[in-house]
Image 1 (tube, rainbow, N blue to C red):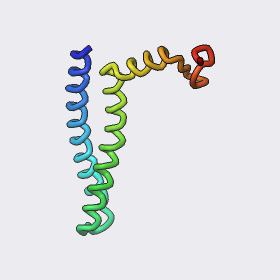
Image 2 (tube, rainbow, N blue to C red):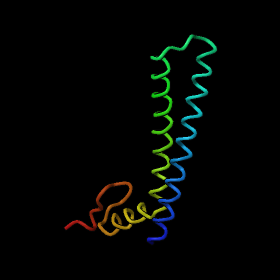
Image 3 (cartoon, helix red, strand yellow):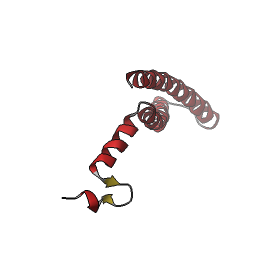
Length: 99
């Protein structure tokens, strides 16, 4: 189990690096596109850089975190604990397990 988690963590780190590269490329593309239509000043560059980069990082990073959770076995641990404690997917706590 430990090797699954270590492998998943290495994959997650590699994925985050690629996401950062994609974010930088998206920022470059957005600035080039804006330059076609309006003159760029410092405010536009800073706002576009921050908005585009962090939007890409946040959106893709959350997906990467979900995949990491699944690959590392954390999702299975939660599912097993929920079954053990009598929780069901549809109705919350099942009445059979109640005391």
